[in-house]
Image 1 (cartoon, rainbow over the protein chains, first blue to last red):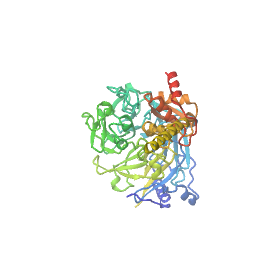
Image 2: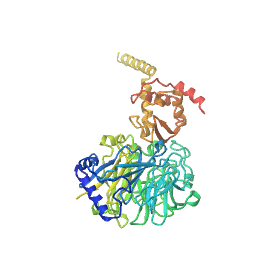
Image 3: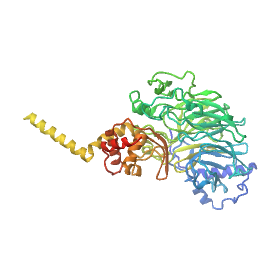
Length: 444
Length: 134
């Protein structure tokens, strides 16, 4: 199904067309926003600089070009309408490079101008209504953007949300914005299964699970209001162990999230689950959320083999007993532990029709399938029609780990994390192991 | 005659077991069993752990260094540790239910596997450290 693509001339030509197209529209500054931006004088060098990465396996017609390397822990990514890229880094070295801004000023398809700012690590990044939003593991900030998508206040962002819980487990605060002035923030549960002692065999569950009061869900805040915290936010959805990938779906006008399912069914309950079951279960679930949504963690998990919500063993389950009558079903259920870190609904026109309004999911890759082989390290695709999946999920971009052996041993060269769509409909993928950014393009 | 042969054979095995336990070899074999039950899910079969999440056990000062500190990690658990400039975030639960012998065996296994080479840990040492650990 997937095949190796190696057309080294595709990308630069496409990039040139894009650059020309942007100039002709007159909407965007071609001189890189007042920065030094002479057209490339050396086209040979240009052709080599945005080389196709043939290790990434894609369906026929697609190519992946490496456009950045060694950025650090490249978490989520956003691409502005003029092609400027912002990447949120997981940690801020030297106290000033938590966010990287990449710009291609000479139109060769590969960024040649890199600036950085932000004295905090984190995961979330988004652009909305002239502002760049970014999150640390406790707070959400926003920066004013000028018409060229330069940040005007890199050292003095407006802190719009603060004091969110960070207990160093599931602490990343991913963000998404709707079109009605709201921002949604994940606050992950600082726990695997809400036991009194986290991950300790035999430790009983909290009944009820108090963690859900302040974490294990999605909170909604105003996108333009400073100094918000729990008291001023809306507890939008609950029963979500940890969400890293999330996106506002403009086709359904609703929030979709990817949950990281629980770990260690076999470690904690060896009499109920063998290592093979523990590797596959529970599902990594996609949910569509509305205000008041409950996805069931920690009381239930979703079993993608039985297609049922199963009572968690900590709460009286035995691997078969159903539970969660008040919990909603997932929209899509993937195999366990693959760690979905990025979600993007594709609205572009560049890719073939089947991709329109469908979901891309970046799977960071598993560790909790040992001693079974590990799995993931790819970008999956789910086709959607009328707001619902219209077919099975499939692997879209594969082999980020470098080889099947690397995947099996969780020794990946790269781990997909963030996804973004460019103005020309290209798909961007980040890697938080070596700090790569790929631009995936399609040509008939 | 036949019985005598069995007797000699059994004696030889018994002697070998004593010898192995003195040199730490049978402890390593038992420790591997404990490792595959209690540790492999996070630290992986090759002891390399998982980037950002579960620490590596390969040639780190925690594994090769002070035995008492290592025993206390098993007894008390651990979270949020920086090893060789790499931060690991996952929670390691306390494994206080393991016996002194199991802890000694698994640590002896870990300290002499994955390219590690360090002295054995005995049940008596674990017992003494456990008594001092609150």
